[in-house]
Amino acid sequence: MRRTLAHAMAVLGLLAVYGCSDDPAAPSPNTTGAPALPAASTMQMTMDFPGVPSLTQTAGTVVASATHDNWINAYSRASFVVLSVYDHLEEPAAAFAAAIHSHPQKQEDGSWLWTYIFVDEESGDEYSVYLYGARGEEAVLWRMEVSSNDTEVPLDHFVWFAGESAFNGRSGWWQFYTPVDASSGVPSARVDWIRSLVERRLTILMNGEGLEGSGDSLDLHETVAQSSIHYEDVSAEESQNITWYPDGSGHLTAPDYNGGATACWDTDQADVACE
Image (tube, rainbow, N blue to C red):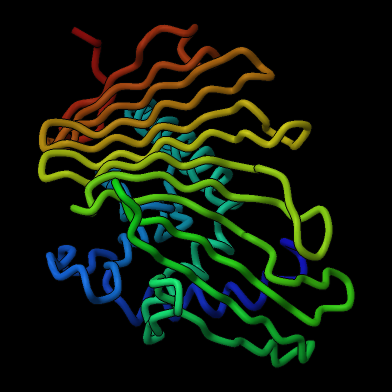
């Protein structure tokens, strides 16, 4: 699935990044129209690390410095962890973001359908993507299906992910699936998200039984007071915590760095003793 859809979703991802806003307008109180799509960042949240561009927008090249070791280690560690986890969600997240470019059509059951077709110019394979949204009693219900004529991984309305979003657009969850045949799959990852007026949070749990990284979790949390990354590696029985503040200072705690003790940096990202 990942290998055959990689090129198609990479193109869709570029369209999403350069052609739409990450934060669509607030949901309309009008209950007769299509429900508002949650922001693309409910699947992959951008966090600005102090002293460098966004973690999710650049690979980054950090020049080693004897007096900035703590910050360099924290940035390198955060980049690796975030991008490694996001790699599992890259294709469905790109497909979801691209749905913003299509016009929804109301269905007979009262739901709304965003649909589009992408043809891979290299292979000639055709992918049909269907995003369904319907208002439930307590939240908006979402489901994305994909079909393809790919001979290696033929898909027939395979449910790529499903989820819910609050009517006010400030919280929700996504469950992603990995295909086992053309039309059915098994859970691979769950994302719980918050986008309120005072915080943004994305918690990702790799919940695919028997899949690589199963049980690992990543928590991204951002408020006006601080930003943080918490990563749990179940197989290694280890956790990592990185926290930084608006003034550029921060600290890192990881079992394989600084003897497991907390390591800090100041507003210039220079190493300092932790208070």
